[in-house]
Amino acid sequence: MTRHDPAPGGVCLLLPGMLCSARLWQAQQEALSRHAETRVVELTADSVASMADQVLDLPYERFALGGLSLGGIVAMTVAHRAPERVSRLALLSTSARPPRAEQRAGWDVLTERTVSGGFADITPKTLLPQLVHPARVREPALAGTVVRMADEVGPEVFLRQLSAQRSRTDLRGAVRELRCPTLVVAGADDALAPVAAHEEIAALVPGARLAVVPDSGHLTPLERPAEVTELLTGWLLADAHPAHAA
Image 1: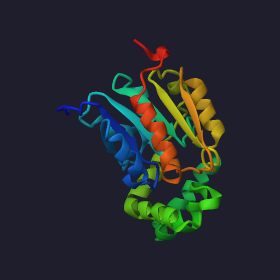
Image 2: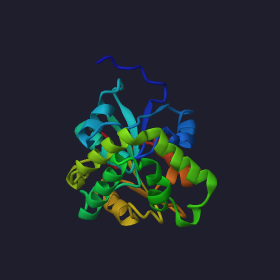
Image 3: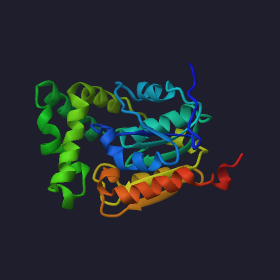
């Protein structure tokens, strides 16, 4: 594979979550691009392993890697499979645990609704209250962006993402082996990935930093863009923690 010559500040890759497009990271990409070549990698494969391949097939020798939700799961997988290529890791609104039975049942329902032609109603009528802070569900701009992202992803990719969710495994053992500087970001009121899931990840990764974003649900980069941008900028520019030094 021909490698790409990175920008002077290196390369930063950002992975959106399920039903999220590059729009999720718009504010952060703009800010981080001042310091590094920053690219959003939309995940379209049908398994976590294949999504990790999407990232590892990119022509970059080494990169900072951030991911939200399903993107965070893929980011952990990439960092475990190719630790020499991941310079630092940011994990937002995610979990290292395998799926629960109720999650699998919910994905089955979403699959059936999508296959039967009901995709357009899934985000505005079912998922939106789970994705953003309860106080912001009716904010037209935020809700409109979440629905627009789902439309950009579309039903075919959504079905592949649901398949990828079912392929998830227990990553806690893999996370214990991570040695790159790691930032873990939780929304204080995330209904899908509670703060405890992030506390668990941060406790497993040596030297990891945990940040809890107040008044935010699952989609922290959209709900609290200034706070998340500040966190990711600090993460990208910070020197490696002594525990990670060679």
